[in-house]
Every structure is written in C-alpha cells, then in structure tokens.
Length: 370
Image (cartoon, rainbow, N blue to C red):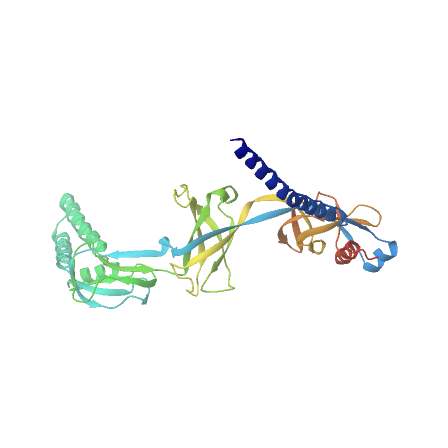
C-alpha cells in the first residue's frame, strides 16, 4: 500500500513539472502582447509646418436629425376597389361569348348574350302593366296600382342589367328582346373567365373576374419591433426583383390591428400607380419605409473616418497640434456624413482633410521611424 502511494505521488510531481514550462511560456506570450499593445502609439504631435503642409482641417461632431429606414418584405395584390367579380343575375343559356381571359374590356361593353326565360317573362309583365295603365280611367286607386306594377317590372329588369335605353325601346316599340346582354361593370382586364358559349348557368354562378390594373396595392409585413416607428402616411420605396434598379414610391394608407402569431408581423398597405401595367399582382417586393419618428444622432464628415488595423477610427484634436487616435463604431451614411454610434462625444473636434496623413504618420511612429 505504501509502495502504491509513493508511485502516485511521483507521477503527480512529474506532471506538474512538465506543465510548468508551458505555463511560463503562455504567461510570457500574454505579457509580450500586452507590452506590444501598450507600446502602440495612440496620439501624434505635429509641427505647425507639418499641419500646414498636410492641409489638416477639423470639424465638430454634431447632433443631426435622422429618419431611419425600415425594411419590410411583401407582395403585390389587386386593388380590391377596382376588382369586379361578375356572377349570373338570372339563369339561362349563353348564346354568344364576346370576351375571353386576358382581354382588355371597357365599362358597359357586352361580354356575352344570354337567353333567359326570366328576362322574357319580365318584359311581358312590363308591357302588360304599361297597357293596363293606359286603359284605366280617372280612378286614382287603380291608377296607383297600375303604376306600382309598372315600376316594379322596370326595377326588376334593371336588376338584370337592362339599361334605361333598352327599357325605353321595349315600351316604345312593344317588342320583347330575345337576348339579355351582360356587360362589363368596369374598365380593365379579364383575369378569369369561367364560362363558355353554350353553357347553361344558374343564378349566382361565377362568370368573369375583371381587374383594373392602373393601380395595385402592396401588402407589406411590418415586424413587431418596428411598429412604433411606422404610421399611416409614411413614405415607402418599393423595389421589385423583375425590374432591377427601378424604384416605385408610395405612402402607407393602412396599418393592421393584429399581429400574426407565426411571423410576428402586422400587415400594412400601400397603393401604387401602375399606368404601364408593369406591376403584376403576385410579385414579391422589398419596401424601404421612412420612419415616422425623427431622432438626433451624432455625425461627423465622412472624410474623418479611417481604417486603422482593421478598425474604424477618427483622429480627435486634443491640443494645439496634437491628435489622438479614437476607435469608433459607425452607423449609417447620410449626405456625406457618417453616424457615430460609439466612441465620440458631441462637440469634439475630429480631423477631416489630412486625416489620412495622420494615419500614415502614426503608422511610421509605430514602426519607430521619425
């Protein structure tokens, strides 16, 4: 037992002995790195002649109002205010079809003719009521009844899309029209045609879908974290993958009231003019929304920011001809100025023109050159 303990102790001592040189080497390396860091110059002093020769100028770090841009994905959709879903107003057989999917049609253009027994019977009622109103004498009660029947027949024919001109012609000639004309309610493109010539359709059956594509809507998805900075009226720039380099501008006119549980976004809507018809519903888009909240942020001229040893730095004036190296964290660029998120205070003076000369001089100093 004693022999075993002696062997274990000897092994522990040996391991410790072998590890000590490694620890010493590691500690030495850390010390060397720290010393090198401390020896790196962090400021530079120039003669007045050198400042003049280099053309060094300074500018004050100032607070400026800035409007943030919020990125939101989305897609183009039909403008529902300019979308018509046509259904059969009465049953009947389609005798002729005059327009097809993809066609451009105009308001009140005849799209199909329908043979409908209901249309025929309503015309007969109209003529009968008209004849009855003419035969009656001066009895006011009967006259009102006849007029009521006549108005009812006219209204029901109007519900079938009969025009005032057609009704006037029927009453004037006493002739019943054999076909009911079905007309386009708006000007636009037929995006869906669901019937063919010869089909028998029942009341309420889908016939056409027509869309006016002179304007489209953008359905954007605003992330929950950005909601506080988005309001109705915010400007937005829309980019579509189909047209690289092109921008379409609009304003948000609607912001949703419910957060989607899966995506954590809220729907917003923008209306875009589309006179050339290039924007197609279903296209994916990216929107840059100009935030409704203005905030002040610290800015310096872009020329003040330099790259130094893989870091963003500026040279802060600390004396007559003395400049100190200062590492910063930069933000956005705006009109030739750079936002400073960290590392600089308001009213501090930074070198602008000649800042590259200062960087070169500092590099030479770090190499031990005069």
